[in-house]
Length: 85
View 1: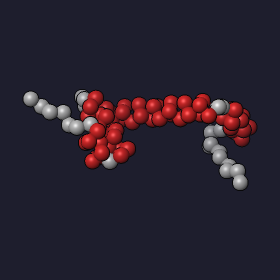
View 2 (view 1 turned 180 degrees about the horizontal axis):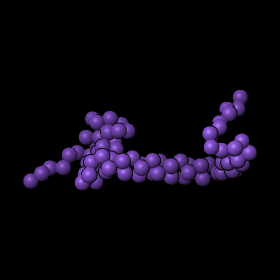
View 3 (view 1 turned 180 degrees about the vertical axis):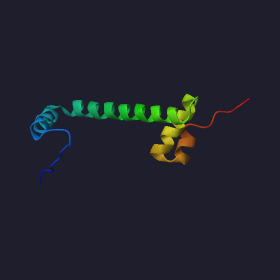
């Protein structure tokens, strides 16, 4: 059973072209595309975090990103708070 996938701003003809292009990709190309999308989403999320917390350190920004993805407890383990002094 095939799933029907539509985008509100894309014509059915262009959707067919896009899906056809995706089907022609090798598994390695598909995986590369997935990782590129993950990088893009991470960059957008970090940009949002920096807007919400001006002056935040890179370590703290990464901790906040990890907290949003995996929860605060795991984020604190992966990115411990900076020690002052």
